[in-house]
Amino acid sequence: MASTTEPFGGRLSVYPDLPGPRRRALARDALVALLLIAFVWLGIRVYHDADRLSGLGQGVSAVGSSVRSAFASAATAARGLPLGGDAIAGVLRGAADATGGQAVAIGQAGERDAHRLAVLLGLLTWALPSLMLLVWFAPSRLREARRLAQARDAVRSADPARGRLLALRAALILPDEVLFRHSPDPAGDLLSGRFEPLAAAQLEALGLKGDGSVP
Image (cartoon, rainbow, N blue to C red; front, side, top):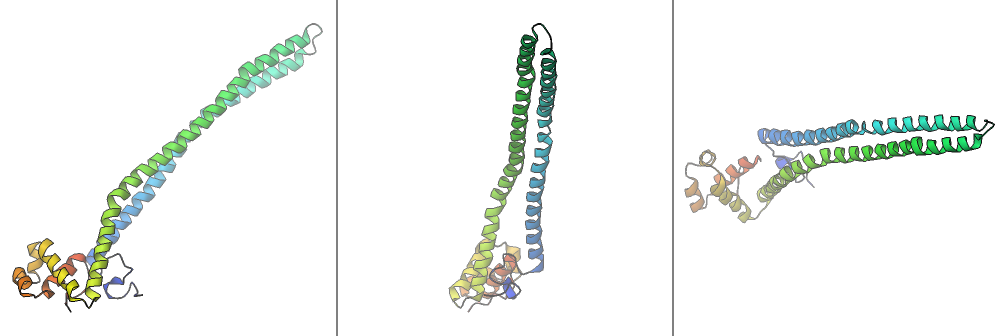
């Protein structure tokens, strides 16, 4: 298998050979990678900020625990009363469960819900823009890599039809200013079977090295 350091960038290369197009492709890929990293950071930041709401539930739980402890202490002290101490202690224990215990349960439920909401918001903040970016960028990037691979195959191939296909594609899609840099009469070259100038123009447009020679 050819190395990516060989002419035409090697078969595994997804970047053009010419310095200018290669730099632009690398810069574009680097920008997309940085955006994906930024979305990850933003999702984590949103998660931590939203997860602070769970502190409200923790506060409610702490207050409920304090109330329950206070009633429990009072119930313990009431048991020592000579008249009706046990009855008073039972009432106080019931009040501890009805007030402090309920507050603890509400606080714990609020803490769980706030944490789940924080996780959901963090995931959405990361996943939605990342998915939109990849849906927009990945198909065009794959098409570009496929075109590069096909052009390299055409240059390396001994099949004359592949070189002619490069020339035909150049004549059909490249702007006139690009064609005229390689041929004074692009249409005439195509009709007369002189495919090398047009093939060279197509290779340049793709950012590949080569003289457009057709076997």
